[in-house]
Structure formats: structure tokens, C-alpha cells
Image (cartoon, rainbow, N blue to C red):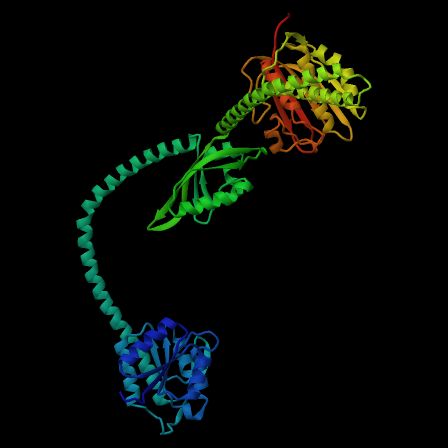
Amino acid sequence: MNGKTDILIVEDSATQREQLRSILERGGFNVRTAADGNEAIAALGARAPTVVIADIIMPGMDGYALCRRIKEREERKDMPVILMTSLGATEDVIAGLECGAEYFLTKPCDGEYLIRLIRGIVSDPGPAGRAAAPMKLEFVHDGRTHAIEASGTRVLRLLLSTYEGAVEVNRRLAASRQDLEKLTLELETKVEQRTAALTEEVAERKRAQEALRRSEEKYRYLVENTSDVIYTIASGGIVSFVNNAAERLSGRPIARIVGRHYARFVHPEDRAAVREHYRNTLLGREEPMECRIPVRSGGIRWVRFRNRPILQEGRLMGVHGSMTDITEQRKLEEQFLHAQKMEAMGRLASGIAHDFNNILMAIRGFTEILLKRLSPEEAGRSFAQEIGKAAERAIALTGQLLAFSRKQELRCEVVNLNTLIADAVEMLKRVIGEDVRISIEPDPLQPLVKSDRNQLVQVLMNLAVNARDAMPNGGILTIATSVSKSGGGSPVLPDPAPGDYAVMTVADTGTGMTPEALAHLFEPFFTTKEKGKGTGLGLATVYGIVNQSGGHVACASELGKGTVFTVRFPLVGEA
């Protein structure tokens, strides 16, 4: 073909547009393309093509409308327009006659047929330049009258192209039918050959499915009845599966866990570390980790978990994991570490107290010698007296350290806690002041314990003073006794051994304490009071006296909701 043959393709489908371009360029034509009718009109203004090929179905301006726009200009009346159609109905042919189209092109298009058609159009331009006389045709189709004005040549070309398109389709269908018959024969042969093999495969598959079913039942039983939480998390962090243990651990129904992001079920302070661990797992680092899980009841549980990445065809799909509740284990570890720390501090306090006491005895002895030698009128006597008072206060402090370290001597006897508290009430009233009201709730069983009476009074006094300081604006101090079994009461200190216990509780309505303060409550020199208002030995002394008597002290407190000290002693019978 010469270089002047120019084809304009108007097709909204980029795939079909490029397919037609490739076919025509292989046939030697110059090809331009347009994605819609408006773009085609602009292309016509730039340079008139030899032939226009337009799809009928396009958004905005369809092929019929585009053909009318082309034919409405006098210089383009004889420009050949090929409409692409599926020949689905007679209405397509009538619409083509009405809009002025010369040819129909069947979709999908055969490349060789298209090239032959274009070459035929280019080599036989028809009535162009000869002013062929139009004919007026009027006919009725489907109850509707159509009036068409067109030359006989154009009508003939349109009908012939429609016929040729149908013939081409039939040719392709016949070829396809022959291919299909051949394939059918081959398929029947293969089916016969495969039937016997399939019979054995089906039997084998049934055996495999039965084995798989049994394995799945066993796996499901193990997963749903294990105490560990088994879970699957998608790559986006959404929980896609959990077993029944998750509900037992968190108190939340499984339906409220699946479909939500895993971070919602992690303690806020641990979320950043857990997210980092999750990212490391996706990178291939499978390491165990411990974190806190808030439970529905309001508390928290400590868990240890390990994740494993899920890979499918080399793609990361998420993680599988298992989780173990280690709350009780951590509690025991904390109790053990705290007990070790208190024991070490007790040994340290005992050593310091003994050595310091020896020094104080020398100071007090020499002070007494000075006081005997100095007359009441001498100025230095008042200084010596102050030295003696300071030494006595220091000796009292060393006594408290010895009480904490459980190295002091106890004069044990059977003591009725109800009587002890009743005898100490008047003294307590003078100590705590008028703003605090004391409520006594004695147990009618008259709980008896074996301990040093004076030391028990010291315990009660220290707890009452501590409660008073926690209620600067007044409040209620409740002292109660009871008899109970061992158990509970402290997140740090170990529970007492099983048995019957006489219990004394001292509760206030004061400011309460933080969890951090509770963790160090019984350590010597630890205090939450202002500087100069406490030595930090009051509760340490309580701890030492109670433990030396074979008892157990615990504390429960919450900011703004007061504090409760619970002191347990082994219950004894009558003296």
C-alpha cells in the first residue's frame, strides 16, 4: 500500500484499539486512533483519513452519531465509514443505512479479512466524485416505518459487507466446529483412559479424606481443649482465629475477639513492644515475649507467647501463635524476689543496728559520766543532756531496725485480740486526734494468738498512725477482728501457710496509695510522707514483728479509696 492510505480507528477499548492498529499496520496502512467520538471529530479536522473504522457502542457519542457527524459535511460525504458490530439484530443494519455507513465489520475481527476489506475499499472508491444519485427507500420493520435516502451503491455495499461478515462468521464457526469435533474425539478417548485411573484415585481420595477427617477431629479436640490460647493473626493485624482458651483467659466471647485488631487486647503500656515483636516475627525472628492482657473483669493477666510467620507461595499472610497464662508464675517470682530482698535488707538492718547500738551505748555512757561531773549551774550540762536525748532517740530507731530484722527478744503469751484492741482504744484516740472516728468491730469468737503483747500494741499503734496521716481532713478508722483460713490479700507478699488464722484488719478512708508505693511499702526507710514527717520505719517494724510472731501482713489500697491492712496470726486455743 502507498503512504497516503490513512486509517482512523475509533474504539473506546484500549485493548481492541491496539489490536486493530497492530493488524492494519502489519497490512501496510498508516493508522491513527481515537478513544471516543469527540476525539475522532478533532482528528478529522487535523487530517482527513481514507477510511474510518468506528465501534458502535461507545460512551457519549456512539458509532451511529459519529457517522452522521462525518457525513454532514459535504467534503466527507463519500468518506467510507465501517461500523464494528456483532450482527446481533436487523436493527443494526437499518441504523447503519439511516446514519450513512458503507460497511459493517464483524466483532471479533479476523485480521486477514479486515485487510482484504480495506484494500478493496481503497482500490474501488465507488461513487466518490461521481455524484451518485440517491434513492428513497421506505419500508416497514417490526411495526415501524423507515424512510432512507441513499445511493444504490452504498446500500449494496452495506448489505454485501453484512453478508460477507456473516459468511466470515459462519466460516470461523465451521472451522471451530471441526476443531471441536476433533477435540471431542480426543477427549472421549482420554476420558475412557482416565476413567479407570479416576476410580482408583476417588477411592484413594476417600481414604485420604477419612484420614484427614480423623486427624482434623483430633487436632480440633486438642486445640479447643488445651489450656494455652491458640490464635491466627492476618498480615494486617486482624485476629482471624482463636480457640476456647482465649475466652477463658480474657473473659470475652470469641465473637468479640475475632475480626478485631490484636492490639485492642494488649495492655496500653505494652502495645508498642508487642507491635515491634509482631513486625520482627514477619521478618522471620521467632522469639518468645511476655506482656499483659486486660481481662473483662477489670484485672490483668500476664502471658508468654510465641509467633510463627505464615507463608503461602512465598507471601507473608500473617502469623500463627500460642499463648500461655503465666500470671501465677510471675506472682510467685515476684513474691520470691521480694522475700529475698526483705531478708537481705533485714540482715543488713540487723548488722547496722547492732554495730550502731554499740556506738550509741558508748555515747550514752560517756554522756552519763559527763552529767555526773557537771553541776546543774554549769553551761555545758544542757549540751550533755541534749546529747543524751539524741542518743536515746537513736537507740529507739535501732530498736525499730531490730524489730524489722526480727532479731529482738519477744516475751510471748496468749493474747486475745479483742481485749488488746479494747485496752488500746483510749491511747489510740489521743494519738490520732479528734478528726478521725474509730470504729471497733470485734469477732464474737474471741480470736487468740501467741505473741508479745507490747509488740502487738506497737503494731496496732503504727498502723493507726499511718492511717491518721492518710486522712489529714479526718475520716473513719475501722479496726476489726475475725477468724479465717489462709489466702489472698497481697499482690507481692506470699500467702500464709494453710491453717486457721486470727485476723486483725485496720482500714481507713484516706487518700490511698499507688501500685508503685504498695510494692515498696514494708521496706525500711521507704515513706510517701513529706520530708521530715516520717522515718520510713513504722511499717517495716510492723512487718518484722508480725513475721517474728509467725504471722503475715498484707495491704490493699487504691488512690482515693482508702487502705486496708490485714494482719494474720496463727490461731491458738485457750492458754
